Image (cartoon, rainbow, N blue to C red; front, side, top):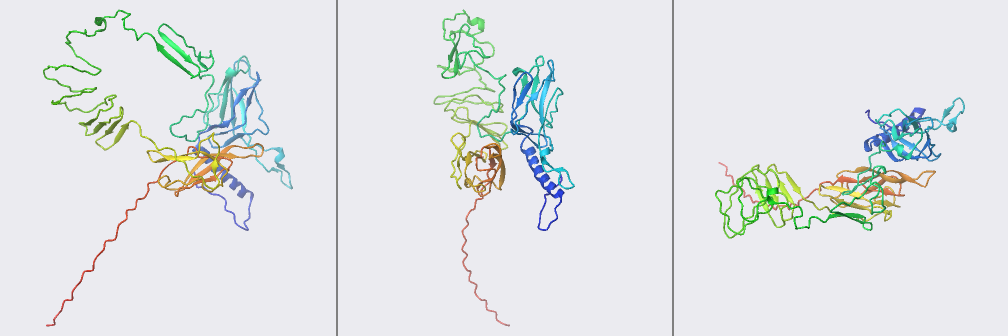
Length: 481
C-alpha cells in the first residue's frame, strides 16, 4: 500500500478538477480502509427479504459492506422496488444479491457552457436475481437463496442462512449475544408450556414422569422406579458379580471406587500403593504411612471441604488442594501457575458524568467501568445530551491507557428524510483518563464494548538526602631544607 497523501490548500493556490477529486478519494479510501480493518464483509443492518406474492419478494432498506470496505446503502427514499421472479419457472433455485454500484442521474446533469457533465455521483446498489451461484468472496452480498415451487415463491422456500453479517463490536464480559435465529430450525413450543403443539413432543412412558409447569416455564422429568427396595427384577449377587454381605474371598484384583472404612484393625502383609486416584486418610494417635514417589499424571477429583493436600512431584512442580472443593492450584517447575476455580472480578464502577452528559435511559446500560484480573479495562453505557469533544467522565489512576486510544462506536446520526438512525462515532481514551466523544452526535453515543489494557503505573520511591559532615583537614607544615 503506498503512503497516504491528502490535498494541502493555501491562499492563491490554483485549483483544478483533480484537486477536488483527490480530496474525495482520500476520505473515501480511508473510510473504506477502516471498514475493511474493523469489520468483515456482510450485512450491517436491514436488507431483510419477505415474500410478497407468488412472484415477488420485498427488500427492506439497510446497509452492507463489501470486501473492499465499500458501503452498500439501500435508501428508503424512494422505497426500494421488489425482486420480481416471474421469469423463473419450475423448481428453480434463485439467488438474490446486492452489490456496490455508481450511476449518474439526469437530475444531476449540468449542461452549462461547453460542458455537459454531472454534478453528483449516486451510489445506488445493483440488485440481481440469478440462478448462477454467486461468488462468496464478498464482491457481492447474498441476501437469500429462493427455491421455487412450480414457479411460485413460498415462505418455506426462502433460505436466509446464506446471509453473512458484519462483525459486531465486542460485548460485555460474561454475556452472550444472539443476533438472529432462523425460525425454521429453532424449537417452537413444548406441550404443556407456553402453547401445546409445535415441533417438540413429550411422551410419558412407564416409570418416567413428566410434569410441565407453564407458570415457571419449565418441565420436571422424574421417575418412580429407583425408590423401590423390593428387587422387582429378582437380580442375584452372582448375576452381577457382587460380593456377598457376609464372608467371601477376593482372589483377583480388588477395586474400590468410593471410600473404604474399617471398624477393626486390618492385618496384611506388605501393603503397597504405587498409584492411586482416590483419597487415603490415616487417623489415630500414632502411625506411619510411606508412599511410593511418583509423577503426578492426573488431578484427583472432588476433594471434600476441609481437605488440604500439598504435593511436591518428581517433575519439580508443586500441587495444592485448598479447603474449597474443586479449587486446585498448580505451580510447575518453570514457575508457571494454573488455577482451577474462579477469580472474582471487580464490580462495575459508577463514574461522575461531566459536561452535561447524562445516561440515555434505563433500558440501556448505565455508564460504568471496571478492570478485570488481567489488567483489561472495560467500559459500558449509553449517554446523550453532552458537549462533543468534552470529557464524558474521567477514569482514575490505574484505569488509564499508556497512550491515547481511538475506538469506533455506535452513535445517533440524523438524516434529512428520517428522524435518525444508527451510525458510527468515535470515542478516544486519553492517557490522563479522559473519555472523549470525538465524532458522532450527542443524540446518543455508545460506550459498550470499549476495552483496553491499563498502563502500568510508575512507582516513585522517595529517597531522603544523606547528610555528609564536613571532614576537617589540618594544614601540614612544610619546613624548607
